[in-house]
Length: 378
Image (tube, helix red, strand yellow):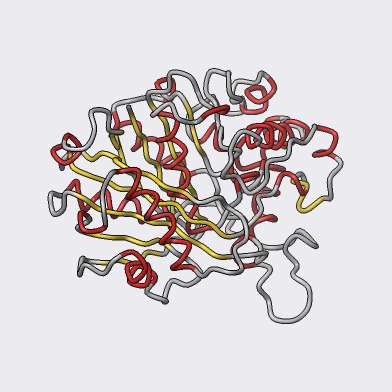
């Protein structure tokens, strides 16, 4: 397998775009990535599009209709919340295998106010998700948080501090859907969605797109002296375990992926300078501190109390504002996390810059199930 580098990235501001469709959103991000790489679509040899809710709409081909139909292979990928990061991985494999020197990955989704995993897209009546808190994902991650509280004594306030941190980070991210700082009292007393997650502890959905250009080492040398290396690209699925099947396992999937990622990259948790992880709910972020080996089992609550995961701490997590503020248009999220890590490794993150960043992790979990981890190095 050859070394693979990220040469260009692009991302549009997450939000709501009722005047555009999925191909237009994806094309906007692709053009930004091509411009960032100093390339045109004529340089791209293979294209992968990740989109979940229009998975049968041939959006890769429709995006190429917007930016240039050169006859290259075009793939369409759907893999739950890991859809975008799976598209990135397929583009990575295309270069690593030696088949191509330049590939393009786009993650894109148009959800509006659909609700996480489409819980709000029911025909007629009110959505139970976000109203009763009994939609699939709010209930799962609420219960996972309660189990952590039972097992380790974690408090609702510690989970709430995740939301405070991420909303504070988002103020410095111009591409975040929401850029509003909230204090602990506002988070704790917010409308309850699925205990212990209140409104500010749940990610918003919307529209968005992000893109990345991946290249071989030889091609990278033609365009830059400081490309970003993809140190590993890992994808796992949910293994069978002897567990209560009434509650999906939100931990093992990530633990397995993290173990493989560190082995493949030749790095450990202490070598990372920043992490963009899948904080679909505040409880999820705290759990993933432990799943990714950022701290020991049962130590996540203390980690957030000590401010270790804030910008300026020893391992900043979700400097972008995370899904809680940036938004979670499902197919776009995986590539957006890559975009954020690349931006920091280049030293281009502005007011949210993690100083001296040389290694970063992008993590996405999609229950159903898939987990991707990419470690990037400067």
